[in-house]
Each structure stands twice: as C-alpha cells, then as structure tokens.
Image 1 (cartoon, helix red, strand yellow):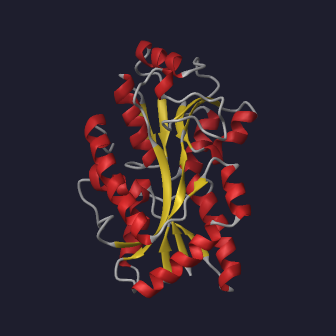
Image 2 (spheres, one colour; image 1 turned 90 degrees about the horizontal axis):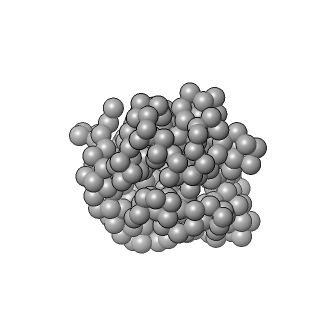
Length: 292
C-alpha cells in the first residue's frame, strides 16, 4: 500500500498522514508506505495518483491545494474532480498567521501598517506555488491592501526552516508545525485564519476581527484514489479509514495539534470537494493571485 503525501516531510499534511498510515499498517497487517512527492503545490502528487493503477494500492492525501490548482494553474495534467474517486475527508485545520520575532508587529493591524509603510520590506513563505498557503496569503494581501514578496518552497517544512532563520518574515502555518516554536519564542503568532477562534488557542484573535473583516481561509485533508477504482474497494477503504479516524486516541492527538478530524462518506466528501472548488475559484478571482 502506498500513501502519497503531496508535500515534504515536516508539514501538517505529513504529520497527519504518517499518523494514519502507522495505524492502518497495524490494522491491515501490511506496510502502508508514506511516499512524499512535493512540488508544484501538490500537483506532482496529484498527477502520479491520477495515472496510478485503480486497484486500491495507491491512495492519495488529497487536500485544499489540489482543489485550488484548477483555478490558479493555466494547465494541469489531471482534473481534481474527474480523475479521483473520493474516499473520505480526514479533517481540517486553521492557519496561524506567524512572523519572525524581528518583525516589528505584535498584531495584525501593526503588520498591515508596517507593510504599508515599507512595501518592499516583507517576504512571505508558502509551501508551494498555487498551494493553500500561497493563496490564503494572496487573499490576505488583497483584502488588507498591502504588498509582500512571495517566496515559495517545496512544502511547509523547508518554508519553516527559512522562517526560523529570518530569511522570510511571514507565513500562514498550521498549528501542528508552529505551536512549539511559538511557545519557545522563535516565532510570534498574530492571528488565526478561521472564521471563529480556535478551540486549541482561544486567546488568539481571528484575522477577521483584527482588522480584515470577512477574511477566512483554512486548510483540509482527505483521501482519494484513482477514478476507476472499483466501488467495492472504495467502500472498504472508507470503512477502514473512518474507523481509524474515529479512534479516540488519534482524535485527541490531532486535536492537540489543531487538527479536527471529520471522517465522512465518499458522497459527503465529493459534495465537499465541489463546494470548495467553487469557493476557491471565487477567492482566486477576488485576490488576483497568480503563479510567480
């Protein structure tokens, strides 16, 4: 069994994917190999999965970046709706807007004021061109009326490394990869990207209530297989993934990292994908986001 993760080790996708793969290895008595395939905002992994044999032995951690790709890339080697059979939504997580401690801003309003006063000062990281961290930052820039220079990386792990060194100053990160550095003072969190405050960090204001009304953008993860995979295999995969996602210890572990697990049916996940496709197509249009 191969579980394709579309980003480099160390990011939120990788953390949750490896936790699930380890548990399913025990359930199936068969090794579920995590195969990290970073690059092109998740599109390299998407293309590999779309072309894989539809036999249930290749599963893909489909995510928000693959839905966004349809609107932000002029050409794709796969169709994020047509070329996959949904298995289940795994869950989702808000982003934290974090900055390097050298940035002279203690909240979102101060960050916006700094960016307006010095339009060429700030660089922001993303986990890849066309991915969720790219687009959510472009949406933030557009709604806040500021400029920042985009520096893309092949995953959240490499982006985090350069943020910690101060080579970039701003990054929308998931709590799973940022909380330890925030607690240690290596990063400063300014706000959460969701519409409501996070249960994990209730003291953290939202971007919307911090000077950018209406702003919202969270990430999510799911499982898909190649489109022609037999329905019986999809049903069995859904049953096993959902049972794993509903295990209390996994739910507690993920909740402590800011990830709320969902565990949906294939039909529910298909409807969710369609809704997200429409939502982010509108966001791309509003933000004017483009590939660098």
